[in-house]
Image: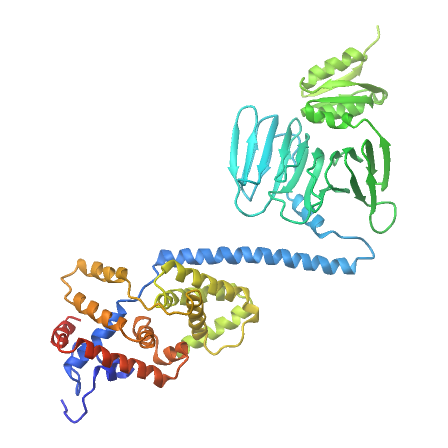
Length: 389
Length: 192
């Protein structure tokens, strides 16, 4: 021990890292008063004990939260990037064709799901991995903006699913033999017919209301002047401001039919011109038939209830060929019907069918009016001209 | 320390290029100490966590526009301090919570009786009476256990000023505790 060093005090120790490191508190240190040393150590220790630490679960929770934020941010960012890429493409190909970014986004999304029209249940696909299966033949789905929920009701049951805050694209798949009436979040009602697919957002937040349709549906759109409603199909777009109309765009039909009951819609389609799109505005009572292959649009005046009555459970037929009628029945009831005689298939009929009957009953009714025989051959119904004897 | 800063530098460069693994590594490296750091400016744990969340989220969001920086560590500390203090209207909240005192008691309950408790509380009470800047310097140096140069940078003052703050605070503490504690404290000190 040496005495020649001047006495260090607590403040000297605490401001000098080297001294503080040496001061382990166990041994007296040369030239340092023990009381001062202990004061220094006590201040250091007392403060050290005030340290608040993040425990492992908290740290992980925080990291999860952070990752979620980043994930959401990235998703938004991607959409912005897609949009800007699309904008560049638009400029490049402007002379060739008109690209609609939101339309192509819808179509890209739409290609994710196939309808599998022949079998299965009606499916409502919400977020990833969240499917609702609806076994009822006639179901009703209602989106409520007020409490952000979906209510699914059929004869047997009623279920309510709460939606998350995010806006998402939902898909409704209706197989052959089933139908669904869906009320979208804006109050618009869509009757989705057999073998159809409807894609729509859970909420309409954007300046457009956009849905995609494959198959047939009747739309009763609530009027919103500042938020036009668009129905996209593969070959034709329908722009509406508030109206009721029916669209039929089955992939296995060669034409797309739009029938307007009331209001006004604009149809946008690839016409006969090489570039760009053509637009037609149709008026109530009009059926617009578009042939994508030829690019031709023809308008005829029709009785609209012939096309929209199926939502109420019956169908009017006016001079329809048997082939057409049978195709409708096959879709509606999900049965396979074969008309043996081609000439028979092209004969036309008129009348009203009550769709509450089943397929056999309906065909029975038809067979009472016209001379046909109906035979069941395994899963197939075969229609033959009645043999004369 | 030098090595660590170099490690940080590489992370920073990777982060600027959009490397997310670098981002995660940076988070793992700093979340703990940033929390302890933030807690000396606020007594609200959830609030401090929110600030850390925002800090890292913004870091990610603006990663491509990050400037060159000599010390990522410093940048993180200073940004967090700004965040925590800004919403509290710039006032520092240097508070030793009742909860933290209880926690100390809780910790010692299992072991032998801790005669330090009383002294620690007395000491902490004395520290609370110190001017704000002195408390901040003490807290940064001895709670968060940052080095003096780091404390200086965070407080935006010179190294000498930091030492002066600590120096003065200890002097005041000695006055405050004068006569009563020295011997007791010394005995207690032996228990470490």
